[in-house]
Image (tube, one colour):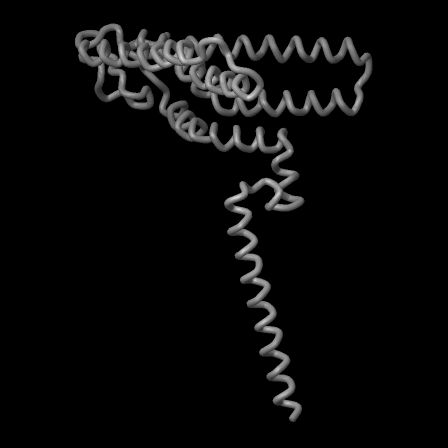
Length: 226
């Protein structure tokens, strides 16, 4: 997950660099980023597979935890994802705290701009907490319990909240980016050009159908009067 995040970050960074100026060796950088991004997960997957680490894992995504067959499974589960996630949570929390402090000191009082920034930060924080708070608590509990014991109600709550991360991210980013307001003002403002053509054709067909219905109704009324 971490390597894929780095890869996506670099792809977007390279795209912005290409739009402004050409970097000296983009192909070489992209090659090593691909090697790092796909090589590390591939090596990890092969190691776990050779060590007979794949098997029934409940909500742990395939890594089997057994004291005899794969004794390192429980530690690998945490190392490959959740320790990195905890570091991201800590980093994000510190970043939000610093931003709040800087805004309060620079503004001296709550302005419209500072309130908007604070609202956006709260939405990001709530979306992140809503997606990952329950899984983090559940994984910590399982990592410190005997043989990966888990509470059923925590597993159910995790299974319910985990799929919501895509929906929450889309909701927060669309709201903060102004896309939702643009969609309310007019769908065509945010649609790509190809879809605008389709939308315009559909609108013309709808208008033509309404005109035909109005014409038929008028003809029917005239026929009745006669």
